[in-house]
Length: 604
Image 1: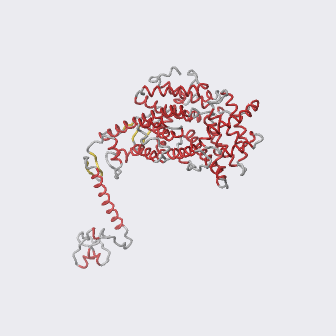
Image 2: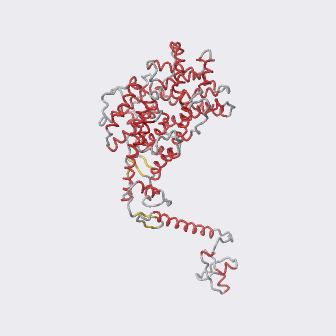
Image 3: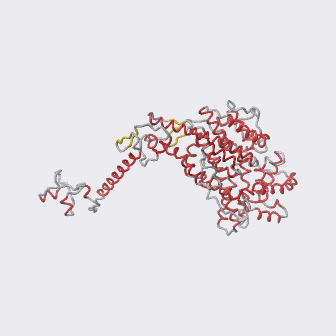
């Protein structure tokens, strides 16, 4: 067989160097009766391949790579000259202890991925976290909707005796929507719509008009001067009128755009008022199919802007539906948020579109999707979760990098985790839109970090215990920082934008998830001033939104259902005009009941 390396005699004559059975001489040297001298490795160079022998060059490249790896190890050792290190079997081992998060982050950034003390965390297993109870604040909606019997879902009916009331309400609802909602978010182009609206002989012949009325009721229901049942009856009247028309319009190329825009305006009512997520999915699916056709049509600049905003709204809503019905949190499927700003639109609309673009960018980032996939089971089903050390340590740098890249108008302070500067920035925030990126950052932080409050390692060792202790301390710090920040944001939001109740309700959900986890896991009490602020915010939401849908303690079945999956409370919620509001009332009161050992809510 050929030798691994040729001798000098065979190499000089370009002959194949074949073993003769004598370890000191090859076959050719034996025949020629010359001394067989092996070549030195450095003299080989890139040898030509002869007789199909590719192995020599492969081994040579492997040797070169080993030399490169050894140089890298020496470079890493030089970076940590102040640490007590040793090299064994190609691995670097730390003899000195890692005592701080900065040291842990520094060592984790090293270029050799099998470094000790991470060999048990990176190469072999994830860090494990103790199971926590399923989150009542975040899991209830999905579990209740998914386990509801088909007969429990409400059917849409029209009360024709309120037709005159509906006609008289249209002008007020349209004006309210255009002046106090659309002026800040730009869902529709106001001038174009007003001209269209004034040209109608009968506004109920237009599905777009009906859709705007539905969306106005869904958003402004706490402020409308109607009873709770009257609001529901009006919304149902407009919804049925709209839906019956838009299903036929999808096949008409000239009205397909109107159908897409109208569909996007119905989604909030289905999800945030009625709990009809399955119906919302059907409506969104049909509208997105139509949107594919509209995209290829020739549109004016105004039409293109409205179409792209409506499509983004539909895509975002579909991701929300998937999160509720399938535990699938993935907003990366939202196409890039449109930034067509029309010349007659306000600065507020520009800021809103800019804000939405960056919030979706964070929610749809590969990192957030990966983390939410790992903590989802713990949040929804109360199961233990696992996560790699590398993924855990990426959280804060990823969040900070996203924050740093925000435009100046939306980056309210330099450090989003410095409580003093953050609270000052919140007090100076001009609107709820400006606070949303900061709120989004802290909602993700509160939800994710509060799920990781109890890490443990199945591998004993001083180094591993040091890492667990460092992680636990940082997770507690981030959770408390984000919880307090969200309470401040909710308080400010109720002051500057009392009509933006859906935002405050969502903030409260994230806050209660984090606070319940902290209190139940580590038994830490809220500071008195934060307790007072939280209770005051809850009192405002209770009086302005939830009081008409209060679920008596003797009637509520939510906590039992979350534990056993039996006796679904959706039948209780559907006895109220707005089932979703009844559910929120039940969720909030159940969570505060859990916290009554540290928070006095007896006055509510």
